[in-house]
Length: 237
Image 1 (cartoon, rainbow, N blue to C red):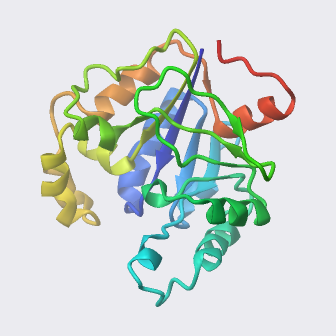
Image 2: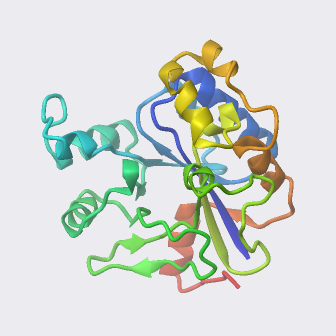
Image 3: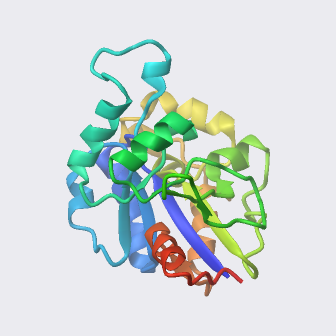
């Protein structure tokens, strides 16, 4: 029975990111953050609690825009230079391919987490052909409200197996519960003062995360799953 909280920071301004970091720090649970950009807020985090992976965005390359983006290796290298300790990688929009997995391995990453199996009760760490590990996730705040699910519960079985949840600071800050709320607020993405006016006062991403953090669950980080797999110690049950 293991639970991993992962955070894709998605270029939010520091005030929005700080809101999430304070919530997690107060709870004291280990978690994994996938960073899209360098910010001083990540520099002073307790590495025993917070793992920092990277969250590159390859979408502009797919759209034909190479200006200021270069190629996939350039995109990854810039983030790897900012976070040289990063062992894990999750692409923005969960973009992945065999070519990218080879690149991730060549650049020294231990694992990638780009496959979502919504609400699956059979998650496991999977070995790839190049000695990297694939670690799927089974819950995401954006998908939860896109499915029209209620945020009173996550729809996961926390009493058995492994659960890996993905939250975004923007949805924690807004306490998002519907796609409509997010789309309405999105134009103020870099303006925390305006974003605050769009906060959901009811049940949403933040209230669900707090509910999970308050439970007596066995929380762990993605890198811990990797280390356990390498040592042959898998304890999901």
